[in-house]
Image (cartoon, rainbow, N blue to C red; front, side, top):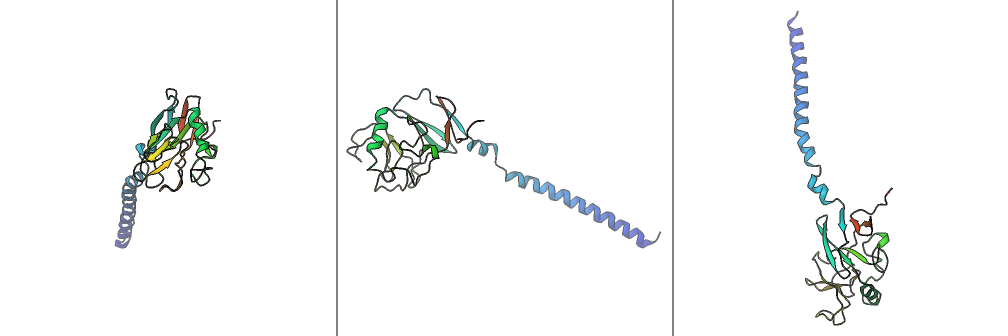
Length: 197
């Protein structure tokens, strides 16, 4: 056997071994990197739909749940509250919610799938503050003839009992209605509005 043949064999073996070792090392380095780009279980849960039991929510009350790290308000409106919504049409900037964010089934005067229940993301559309609820119709320092709704104390934005912003206020749009659906008379799911099979 010639010396050249021996060197060629060693060369091929070393080249193959080096190639395999490099491939294994690159794969071992890439796996944690790729895995770090996948959403964590916590991140997956943060975007997951939230089931809400509204059976103990009395008329005229509000509850707050968290969905995607945001406060979501569920308000059970009384018949009197529903009557004031139409009365506010001339006071709000977008009475028909044409430029607002809401699912198609909430693009109505009550901005709701069921008029009795209002579901809103509790973040002002101006600068992201959290408005406070003033659900009862009574004179307020910011509106002497207040019908009830939501008030953002940071910059003075006012919203009615359908989450529609009043005219000439800093907030440009109505409060956001997230996707949701009722799975029973007393249970709604926020973050999922697909129809069941």
